[in-house]
Length: 309
Image (cartoon, rainbow, N blue to C red; front, side, top):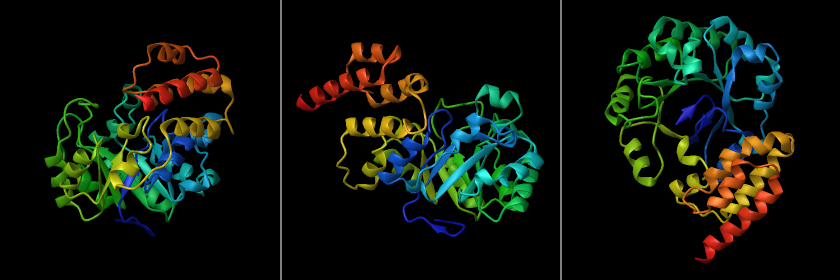
């Protein structure tokens, strides 16, 4: 798969995940074999306003190169100005989010709400192409309430360099099953690369997605608490223990974030790392976490006991 000047041999990507895809998690996934990673969803308008929270979300490590930034919004000119901001110069690929089904995003006419306005989507893509020579990707769903194959073709005509398709409609959210047949039809309708997304959690589900004819795949929930899934899918050896991943995740985040923030932020990540492990007392401690190091000491004991079973 080729995106701009970049050639990807395996094309197994880490999807952008709002509130989850911090730079440390992305770096760990890249180390395990993810070929490309994306920032969390960045508000184009927030970037223009110089939001401190937005700027921190743009933090990256050298290990992430090449790296893509994902923007959301609804106003073509705002996208144009955001892309030309110096904060985005380090990113190799610009990705536009037309697929987020979160109610607060949709209510504001952004994300997957744009799927109902093909003309506006085309205008945004065309405007972004004028703002940069970097590749422009677009994240979409199959449609709003029903499948609409005109979307992918329209985005190709507008100049999108590739599209990522989540195999559900906006109305479905993350419920129901991925429509592999619809993704396959989209692949046959466009000449630009198509990345398939949705429910890739194992070698079996990965193979189902490859069979649609996609040029690449993108993982989201399958990587939560399991950055080594990329090594598993690529059948490459990973000598890092799960607890070491946890410690490195914390260590990297502590370089720019204070513990009072991380005590709240890391709760979900810690619980994902413990998925499938019976440790009710520890999980309760995490839910009320006030001291990260105390939790890490107890997590270490749990992981060591699990390995000794």
